[in-house]
Length: 297
Image 1 (spheres, rainbow, N blue to C red):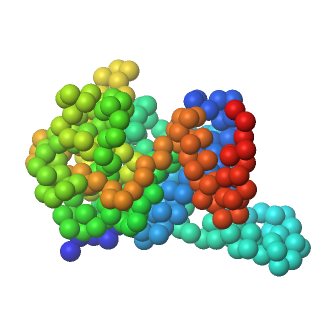
Image 2: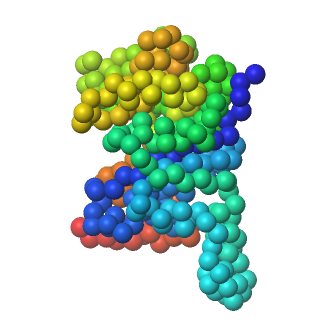
């Protein structure tokens, strides 16, 4: 039987330069989607999938993230309690945040690249499979993308790359694409991974985005990549995955079914996400929709 996955790693040490000057004092992971920061949507999805330990790899400027998932301060709690019955739902919400999971914070150290947070979390992950997912994008689906990836892991016992079908030509210049034998529609037994291949050279239409299940053997391959990293080169986990494939390790690319991918890592996509979620929010959707209809541009 495959080991149960209970841990997840979220890299959150970037500077968010695309959102300056806003991110000068506030981490991009804390940008609100209506009334919740982006990273909370990711954490809630992990918790719903059974993850109990969430390791967030941060930088010196990310204390706000730690504060958000910590217990609410006494002044806020007292203020909400004094507000009477109307404020009780808000009190329940803020208290629930800190109780969702065990939160572990690590300061990032090492070369630039998405492989560094993984090695930073290695001593906490140990010899266990885990989820690696980003803090500024997510996929909304039913079942959730995390549950879908975990189902594939349970079936095959290997690393799983969460994927979405490319819908625009420029997607092929933004993401990595997996190729190999199609086990069934939307599921590939990966034999190759090509970064930003361009549409004409892509091995499939499955773009690897947002979240992954990794088996612990990835750490040894990350070590090898790091040892051979040239001066000024960036440290990427995809290079470790390529070495795993070369050694015959099984890796699956799984399309997240019935899902929509949201990338809040740039201004335009962030604003699109915020508007779409506002149109679904039960407190404001009607009035906000009416506002948009009446807006003169």
